[in-house]
Length: 189
Ligand code: URA
Image (cartoon, rainbow, N blue to C red; front, side, top):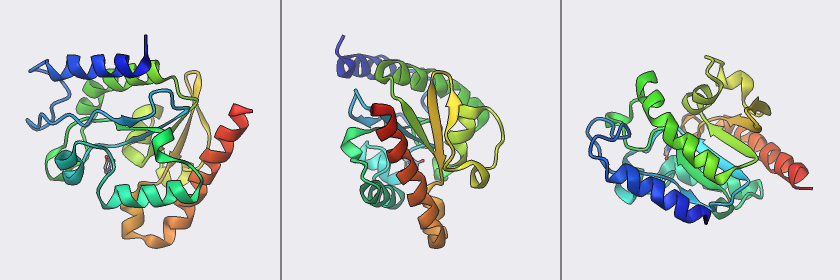
Protein backbone atom coordinates (compact mmCIF):
# COMPACT_ATOMS: atom_id res chain seq x y z
CA UNK A 1 0.00 0.00 0.00
CA UNK A 2 1.05 3.60 -0.58
CA UNK A 3 2.89 4.83 2.54
CA UNK A 4 0.96 8.11 2.71
CA UNK A 5 -2.32 6.18 2.72
CA UNK A 6 -1.00 3.91 5.47
CA UNK A 7 -0.03 6.96 7.55
CA UNK A 8 -3.42 8.58 6.89
CA UNK A 9 -5.21 5.38 7.96
CA UNK A 10 -3.20 5.25 11.18
CA UNK A 11 -4.02 8.89 11.90
CA UNK A 12 -7.73 8.42 11.18
CA UNK A 13 -7.84 5.33 13.42
CA UNK A 14 -6.38 7.29 16.34
CA UNK A 15 -8.49 10.35 15.65
CA UNK A 16 -11.71 8.36 15.74
CA UNK A 17 -10.76 6.73 19.06
CA UNK A 18 -12.24 8.96 21.75
CA UNK A 19 -10.19 7.16 24.41
CA UNK A 20 -6.96 7.34 22.48
CA UNK A 21 -3.90 7.12 24.75
CA UNK A 22 -2.50 9.92 22.62
CA UNK A 23 -4.67 12.52 24.35
CA UNK A 24 -2.54 14.24 26.95
CA UNK A 25 -4.12 16.54 29.55
CA UNK A 26 -7.41 16.29 27.67
CA UNK A 27 -5.88 17.94 24.59
CA UNK A 28 -7.34 16.24 21.53
CA UNK A 29 -5.54 18.11 18.75
CA UNK A 30 -3.28 15.36 17.38
CA UNK A 31 -0.07 16.69 15.81
CA UNK A 32 0.61 13.48 13.96
CA UNK A 33 3.67 14.40 11.88
CA UNK A 34 4.47 15.70 8.42
CA UNK A 35 6.89 15.31 5.57
CA UNK A 36 7.99 12.71 3.10
CA UNK A 37 6.41 9.29 3.82
CA UNK A 38 9.36 7.67 1.99
CA UNK A 39 11.96 9.66 3.95
CA UNK A 40 15.30 8.08 4.80
CA UNK A 41 15.46 10.50 7.75
CA UNK A 42 12.92 10.85 10.54
CA UNK A 43 13.25 13.70 13.02
CA UNK A 44 11.57 13.00 16.34
CA UNK A 45 11.01 15.63 19.02
CA UNK A 46 9.44 15.53 22.46
CA UNK A 47 5.92 16.94 22.18
CA UNK A 48 4.01 19.73 20.45
CA UNK A 49 4.03 23.14 22.12
CA UNK A 50 1.56 26.00 21.86
CA UNK A 51 2.39 27.04 18.29
CA UNK A 52 2.30 23.44 17.10
CA UNK A 53 -1.06 22.95 18.81
CA UNK A 54 -2.45 26.04 17.07
CA UNK A 55 -1.07 25.21 13.62
CA UNK A 56 -1.45 21.42 13.82
CA UNK A 57 2.13 20.91 12.64
CA UNK A 58 5.33 19.83 14.43
CA UNK A 59 8.21 22.24 15.06
CA UNK A 60 6.69 25.50 13.80
CA UNK A 61 7.33 27.78 16.80
CA UNK A 62 10.59 29.52 17.76
CA UNK A 63 12.38 26.21 18.35
CA UNK A 64 11.03 24.92 15.03
CA UNK A 65 12.35 27.97 13.18
CA UNK A 66 15.79 27.38 14.66
CA UNK A 67 15.59 23.72 13.65
CA UNK A 68 14.69 24.84 10.11
CA UNK A 69 17.71 27.17 10.01
CA UNK A 70 20.11 24.42 11.12
CA UNK A 71 18.56 21.90 8.72
CA UNK A 72 18.95 24.28 5.85
CA UNK A 73 22.56 25.16 6.80
CA UNK A 74 23.41 21.48 6.98
CA UNK A 75 21.93 20.77 3.56
CA UNK A 76 18.95 18.76 4.80
CA UNK A 77 15.65 19.71 3.18
CA UNK A 78 12.90 19.68 5.77
CA UNK A 79 10.38 18.49 3.20
CA UNK A 80 12.53 15.44 2.42
CA UNK A 81 12.45 14.28 6.04
CA UNK A 82 9.49 13.12 8.12
CA UNK A 83 9.06 15.12 11.33
CA UNK A 84 7.05 14.04 14.33
CA UNK A 85 7.14 13.87 18.13
CA UNK A 86 7.13 11.10 20.73
CA UNK A 87 3.93 12.50 22.21
CA UNK A 88 1.32 13.66 19.72
CA UNK A 89 -0.77 16.14 21.72
CA UNK A 90 0.32 19.12 23.77
CA UNK A 91 1.15 18.59 27.44
CA UNK A 92 -0.22 21.58 29.38
CA UNK A 93 2.26 24.34 30.19
CA UNK A 94 4.84 22.62 27.96
CA UNK A 95 5.73 20.17 30.71
CA UNK A 96 7.90 17.17 29.83
CA UNK A 97 5.77 14.08 29.11
CA UNK A 98 5.83 11.43 31.84
CA UNK A 99 7.29 7.96 31.30
CA UNK A 100 3.76 6.57 31.34
CA UNK A 101 2.62 9.00 28.62
CA UNK A 102 5.66 8.15 26.51
CA UNK A 103 4.89 4.45 26.89
CA UNK A 104 1.28 4.99 25.86
CA UNK A 105 2.19 6.98 22.76
CA UNK A 106 5.14 4.78 21.73
CA UNK A 107 3.14 2.20 19.66
CA UNK A 108 1.96 4.97 17.29
CA UNK A 109 5.50 6.14 16.68
CA UNK A 110 6.52 2.50 16.21
CA UNK A 111 3.82 2.16 13.53
CA UNK A 112 5.00 5.33 11.82
CA UNK A 113 8.57 4.00 11.78
CA UNK A 114 7.37 0.64 10.39
CA UNK A 115 5.56 2.40 7.55
CA UNK A 116 8.27 4.95 6.69
CA UNK A 117 11.27 2.66 7.26
CA UNK A 118 13.85 5.44 7.63
CA UNK A 119 17.59 4.72 7.72
CA UNK A 120 18.27 7.31 10.42
CA UNK A 121 16.19 8.72 13.24
CA UNK A 122 17.47 12.03 14.56
CA UNK A 123 16.14 12.39 18.09
CA UNK A 124 15.82 15.99 19.20
CA UNK A 125 16.55 16.58 22.87
CA UNK A 126 16.89 14.39 25.94
CA UNK A 127 13.29 13.21 26.23
CA UNK A 128 13.04 11.82 22.66
CA UNK A 129 16.52 10.31 22.91
CA UNK A 130 15.78 8.51 26.16
CA UNK A 131 12.50 7.21 24.79
CA UNK A 132 14.49 5.36 22.10
CA UNK A 133 17.53 4.29 24.04
CA UNK A 134 15.59 3.38 27.21
CA UNK A 135 18.50 4.59 29.30
CA UNK A 136 18.95 7.85 31.20
CA UNK A 137 21.97 8.91 29.11
CA UNK A 138 23.08 12.53 29.20
CA UNK A 139 22.17 14.25 25.92
CA UNK A 140 25.13 16.62 26.29
CA UNK A 141 27.43 13.56 26.21
CA UNK A 142 25.83 11.49 23.45
CA UNK A 143 24.56 14.07 20.95
CA UNK A 144 26.15 13.69 17.53
CA UNK A 145 26.85 9.96 17.93
CA UNK A 146 25.39 7.24 15.71
CA UNK A 147 23.77 4.69 18.02
CA UNK A 148 22.22 1.40 16.91
CA UNK A 149 18.48 1.05 17.38
CA UNK A 150 16.89 -2.15 16.08
CA UNK A 151 17.81 -2.25 12.37
CA UNK A 152 18.49 1.44 12.03
CA UNK A 153 20.53 4.25 13.49
CA UNK A 154 19.61 6.87 16.05
CA UNK A 155 21.58 10.12 16.02
CA UNK A 156 20.62 12.33 18.96
CA UNK A 157 20.95 16.08 18.83
CA UNK A 158 20.38 18.94 21.24
CA UNK A 159 16.92 20.46 21.48
CA UNK A 160 16.61 23.83 19.69
CA UNK A 161 14.74 25.21 22.73
CA UNK A 162 17.97 24.60 24.66
CA UNK A 163 19.96 26.40 21.94
CA UNK A 164 17.59 29.37 22.24
CA UNK A 165 18.55 29.58 25.92
CA UNK A 166 22.27 29.05 25.22
CA UNK A 167 23.04 30.29 21.67
CA UNK A 168 26.74 29.38 22.01
CA UNK A 169 25.68 25.74 21.62
CA UNK A 170 24.33 26.39 18.11
CA UNK A 171 27.59 25.21 16.56
CA UNK A 172 27.20 21.82 18.31
CA UNK A 173 23.60 21.54 17.09
CA UNK A 174 24.69 22.37 13.53
CA UNK A 175 27.59 19.94 13.71
CA UNK A 176 25.17 17.12 14.75
CA UNK A 177 22.95 17.85 11.76
CA UNK A 178 25.95 18.00 9.40
CA UNK A 179 26.87 14.55 10.73
CA UNK A 180 23.30 13.34 10.06
CA UNK A 181 23.57 14.63 6.48
CA UNK A 182 26.99 13.02 5.97
CA UNK A 183 25.84 9.67 7.39
CA UNK A 184 22.73 9.69 5.20
CA UNK A 185 24.88 10.39 2.16
CA UNK A 186 27.14 7.44 3.01
CA UNK A 187 24.19 5.11 3.59
CA UNK A 188 22.59 6.11 0.29
CA UNK A 189 25.76 5.40 -1.76
N1 URA B 1 9.46 20.96 20.61
C1 URA B 1 9.33 19.66 20.28
O1 URA B 1 9.95 18.78 20.86
N2 URA B 1 8.48 19.37 19.30
C2 URA B 1 7.78 20.27 18.61
O2 URA B 1 7.04 19.90 17.70
C3 URA B 1 7.96 21.62 18.97
C4 URA B 1 8.80 21.95 19.96
